[in-house]
Amino acid sequence: MAVTNRSDSGFALVEAVVSLGIVAAILGATFQTIAMARRAMTGAEERRVAMLEAQSLSAQLGATIPLIPGSSSGQSESFHWRVDNETVGSREIEAPLIHSVVTISDEREQVLARLETLRLAR
Image 1 (cartoon, rainbow, N blue to C red):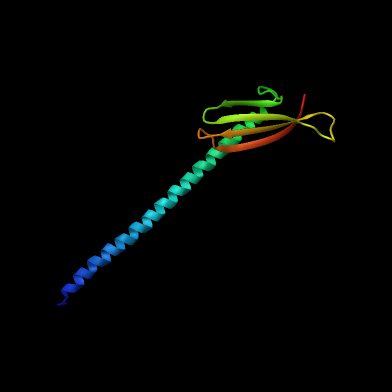
Image 2 (tube, rainbow, N blue to C red):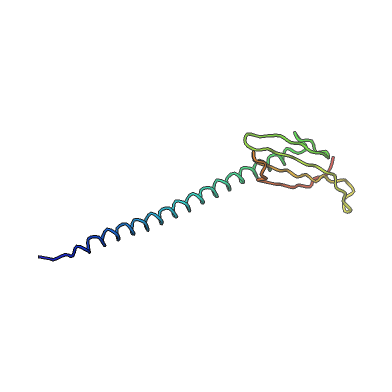
C-alpha cells in the first residue's frame, strides 16, 4: 500500500491551474492570429474587387465616361469612384494625350485602388 503526503495533493492542484493558464494563453494567441489573418484576407479581397472596378471604369473612358479634361465621380454598389482627366503634351507625338487617373475608395474615403492610363485625345 502506497503512502502519500498531504502536501502533494495541493501541489497537483497548482500544476493543473498553471497548465490550464498556459493552454488558455496559447489558445488566445492562436485565435488572435486567426482573426488577424482573416482581416488581412478580407482587406485583400476588397482591394482586389476595387481594382477590378477601376479596370472596368478605365475601359469605359471615352464610351460612357467623357474623355475630356476635368473630373467625373460616382458610386457603385460598395465603392466611391473618381476619374480625373488632364491634357498632356508630347514631344514625340503631335496629338495631345489625356492622362486619366481612376481612384476607388470605400465609404470611409480610404483609397483602395488607383489606376492611371494615358490615351490619345480625340
